[in-house]
Amino acid sequence: MGESTQVTKAGVELVRVYRSRKGKYVVHKQSAEWTDFSVVADWVKELKKMQKTNWRGGLDLDNQSWGDRTLEVVDSFEELRERVPAKIFRTLTDTSAHPPIEDLDI
Image (cartoon, rainbow, N blue to C red; front, side):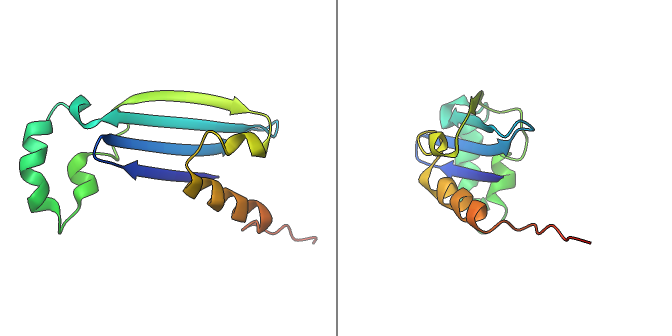
């Protein structure tokens, strides 16, 4: 349903929200502090060089092997508010009100 990546001075957090077949909401979080990355020293040196290029690729955030993961299943849409960043909740609220998919009665 939605995804959000937050990069801060302390680290990075990736949050994904899915809808289960039974109508529940699944919140998958993946987070790491910068010190958790094995190449932090090299990374910091190269960061300035990457500012005008693909910094996300340089950090290897697309590689799903980094960080700690959690998975929560909640019953209602309102329970999501407490578990996801405000930005992704607003997106999910808009998506719920205006679904991008339309069923055609043909």
